[in-house]
Length: 127
Image 1: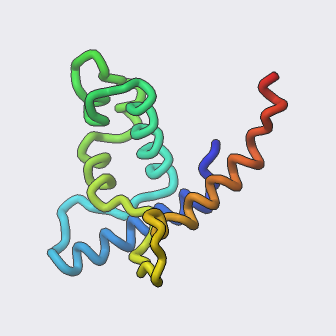
Image 2 (image 1 turned 45 degrees about the vertical axis):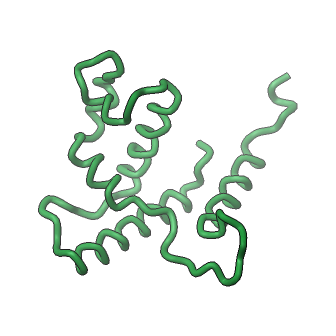
């Protein structure tokens, strides 16, 4: 809802680029295939879900314990989640260009989210 499609697509592109470069340098990984936008949305949903429910770990979704969530776990295997997590990137390498700001690397992503929040949420809607 709040993450624009262009941000999702950028995450897909950057994750796949990073995976390719990593595998070129260290050897290909069996079972890896490029991530899709649908998978990226599910991946982000898992991460947000475990944050909201205060799980010990996002991997708790696939456990048999208290935090397991069968309906979510059916969307993606644990192995696939872990592969996407290994290569997940929001942006490609960006030199700091003399910037002292700690978030310079993801600032374009944050700006896009801020713009999306501004268009989606109006404080008057909550009254």
